[in-house]
Image (cartoon, rainbow, N blue to C red; front, side, top):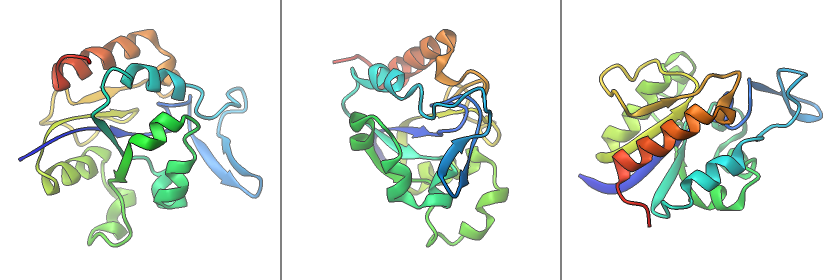
Amino acid sequence: MSDRQVLFLDYDGVLHRGGAYRTKRGIISSDPTHIKLFEYADVLAAILAPYPSVELVLSTSWVKGLGFNRARSALPAADLRAKVVWATYHSRFHDAYFWDGMARGILVLGYVNRHRLVHWLALDDMDDGFDDEPGRPVHCDPDEGLGDPDIQEGLKAALYAQFGEMR
């Protein structure tokens, strides 16, 4: 069993409202009323500040579209980028060609099992595939993301419950 503390992180519907897609000009929001991508990155950084040992594993589809390094580099907060250690997706995984059709929870649980994680949470706007893991996914409304104060408080409570005392 591993003593690592891991938060699986999705981007779309979590760190910004709605989704995003690639264009020739770069990545843009799928909702023209929500122009700023990663609008809640600083919120997550502040919530995680008391937990310096928590690692981030990217569970976002951005990794498949951009690759791990570019997806990590897209995070505007340096303290969040520094916490990112890996992703649930890698093209060398035996199930990589199934990834698009797999529930997010299945991908996360695959990583959890491979790395024998005991202490982990997932921050996502999708909760499919987490059926046997109540309390592990912190679910965001994709139209609000981490901009919702109730979700922020829920994440703080889940971090405390899973990772214990703050520093």
